[in-house]
Each structure stands twice: as C-alpha cells, then as structure tokens.
Amino acid sequence: MLKKIAIIGLMMMNSALLYANHHRIAVVGTGYVGLVLGAGLADFGHYVTCVDIDERKVAMLNRGELPIYEPGLEDVVRRNTQSAVRYGPRLRFTSDIANAIREASVVFIAVGTPTGDDGHADLRAVKAVAQACARNLNGYKVIVTKSTVPIGTGKLIRSILAESQSDDFSIVSNPEFLREGSAVKDFFEPDRVVIGVDSERAASIMREIYRPLHQAGVPFLVTDVVTAETIKYAANAFLAVKVTYINELANLCDVTGANIKDVAAGMALDSRISPKFLNPGPGFGGSCFPKDSLELALFARDNGVHLDVVDASLTANNRQAVVMVDKLQRLLNESVQGKTVAILGLAFKANTDDVRESPALRIIGELKRRGATIKAYDPIATKTMAVLEPTLEYCSDVYEAVAGADAAIVVTEWHEFVQMNLEEVKNRMRVPVILDTRNILDRKALCVLGFSADNVGNA
Ligand code: UGA
Image (cartoon, rainbow, N blue to C red; front, side, top):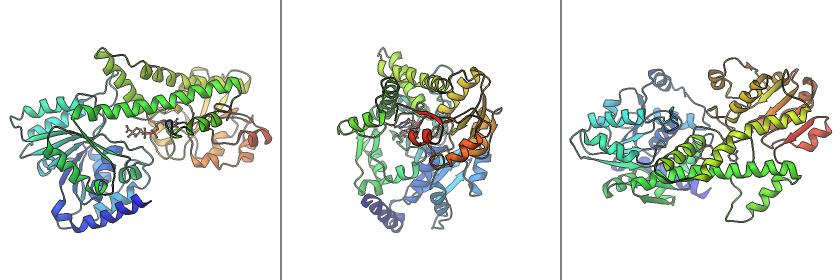
C-alpha cells in the first residue's frame, strides 16, 4: 500500500518535472506487453508513441477502444491519450514505424515472438523492428527488447543495427514480468526491474525511464544483456516447474486420499518454498510458460546442455488435460463418448480473454477425440476461443451451458463460477456431475446438493 502511495505521489510529482526528465519513446507492438508498457510509461510522464503494423488495431486505439481485455488498462490509456500537455497527448498510436523511431530516443520492442514450426520462438517480427531501427537511426538511440526473446537476441539485434554503418546506439534487455489479468498493477508495483545493458549511458537512461519505480524503492538489477535475457526464461520456466510439481502431487493425492490444499499449506509454511504458485489445476497455459519453457529447453539442447527438469515439466503439463478427462470418466463411471460436457471457462486463467495454450483447448481436444459433444461458456473469452474452435456451441451464461449436460468441468477460476447458483445448475443438468479443476467449489457442499463431484488432489 505504502509503495503504491509513493508511486502515485511520484507520478504526480513527475508531471511537474515533465520537461526536465521526459523521454520520447517508441513502443513497437500493442499486444498485452506493449500496450501496458506504453500506457504505463506515458503515466510516468514520457511521450510515448505505440506502433502497430495492424492498422485496424491502431484505428481502434485511436477511437479509444482497447483490442484486449486487461483490468484497469482502459483508465490508464484514456488519461494519457487525453492528456493535453505541451507536446500533445503523452500517448499516441500509429502505424508509421519509421517516424515513431526517428522521433524517439528509446525504442522498446514489444512485438510477438510466437513458437515457430521448429519449436523455437519466431523472431521475424523482432528482426523487422531491428531493421526499421537500422534504417531510421538518426542519432543515438537505446533499443530495448521487452518481449521475451531467445537468449542471444540482443547480439542478433546488434548485428542488424551494425548494418546501418553507425554505432550510435545501445542494446538493452529489459524483460517484462507482468501477468495478464493483473498487468497494470504489476507494472506500477513490480517485484523488480531487470536491465541488461552494454553501456553505462544506456543504464542511466533506463534508470531515468523507470525513475518513479527506482525512487519508490523497487529493486533494480543491472546486468549484461545475455544475463537479463536468461533471467526472464529462468524465472518463467522455474514457475512453470513449480506449477507442474504441485499438479503432479495433486494427482498423487487423488490416489492416496491426502488433501493437496493441506499439503501445499504445509509446504508453504517453509519460507524457502513460499505459498505462491502452489495451486494445482488443469495445467499451465498462456502465451508465456509453455512457449518459454520450450524455447529454453531447446536452446539449452542446441548448446549441448540438458534441462531435464524443464523438459519433464512440459511433458507432464501436456498430460494434465488427459488426466482431467480420465478423472471425468471415472466420475461418470463410463466413457464420455456420446455425452454432452459443459466447459465452464475457456481463458487460460481468470481475468483475461487470452486463450493461447489454454488448458481448456487441450481438454476440449481430448473430449472431442473421445467423442463428447461440447457446450462452452466463459465470461470474457468466448470470442477469442471462437477463432480457434469455431464449431463449438458457445453459450451466453453458465446456466445455458449446463442445460441438458451430462457433466460440467470448471476449467478457469472465474469468480463468477464460485458464485454460481448450484441448485439451479443441478436442476438444469441432465446428470449432476461436476469436475472442478481449479478447486474453487466446496466439494462437500456439492455432494450434499446431490452432485457427483470431484476436484484436483482431493481438496
Ligand atoms: C507469466 C509470469 O507469471 C509473468 O511474470 C511473466 O511476465 C509472463 O508470464 C510473461 O512472460 O509474459 P502469465 O502467463 O500472465 O504470467 O500468467 P501466470 O499468472 O503466471 O499463470 C500462468 C499459468 O500457470 C496459468 O495457466 C495459471 O492458471 C497457471 N497457474 C499459476 C496454476 O495453475 N497454478 C498456480 O498456482 C499459478
């Protein structure tokens, strides 16, 4: 709380000091990372131009509409696009990358790095931005990678920039640690800021950019570029391993009768372990853990090093969806073939509309493979899921989804599912069978109501 007040205070103070400390910044890519970063940096008093190749997206943003759902982001975007200070609004959107780069002293690369056909991160968009920087290098610029880029990308960008025949630039790796769903809060209250630099000049500019956080006491770790790149992968893969570990223990508890919630609580009392990321579930998803774990494992292998723990975490995570569907069949006492299953929750976690690598996708795939019919509902993510799974029956609320179903599976921990009227759910289902893969419902209460219910790890 204190930290938050300090940051807000500094933000207000910052607007007074605007002209002494502001930077002109280009943020290329307006996805979850770029948009939160751009809006947040504008809130710190900098002049930020967010660039996207997708003109439709830019037009939307210029109309004040957000292309993604992220709690709290709309307010930060609005107050900075409408801020009428000396040089116009602090936050602008454009497709004109050349001009945005020429105007900026700092360029953040926040474009997508999806997994390519060979399993490695696809760096085409990053390279294109680096080439645009090379073409528009009209004075000293700091080029910062913000999206998660494979270890060694800083070196690659340097080689592309070198083609400009100028060495008037610095390369920085400044990995982001935002979580979707709480990205705005994470931006203003980070655990740390990691800055990998190749020069003291760049380090000092980066400190200026994040001045409000620096002054609020947020730890800054300044390293070389390759170390910062490695920190990002090391952190994500470690958290993914932690989630996998608790998932596998939950599967064990299902067999032994031990309660995973108590097991996790007992582990978490050891301060070396910490209670965070010990919630078992249907497997980790999203645009980061699966992709980053895979990239790290492949990168290590290419370099003659085995990261067996990371490999195993990926294998176990893929299996978790199958474990969930097996569990459902045990609850039903028969195969799901010919059954109608209601999927409650499609987003890879609550408070986001992102379905990339969502466990719901894997569970739906497995159910379809076994011959089930699917009805699906999510408070926010039906639209994004419909792009990937256009043939599912999408429902407009929980009660429509469970109507006539032989079973329901809670896949995302939306608050709405904690609060659903279970009597009503039971009355609408053909057979009252429910599998809670997020341990958000009271299993005993469900059984009292007449459900055949299970969760993960006998919680
Ligand atoms: C993750 C990291 O937490 C961020 O620090 C990082 O910046 C981000 O990736 C990124 O690299 O961009 P995110 O993917 O938004 O953030 O989501 P998390 O909250 O970390 O959850 C990842 C997955 O693990 C979700 O599927 C979630 O449901 C699952 N999870 C998480 C569990 O199953 N149990 C837990 O206890 C925690």
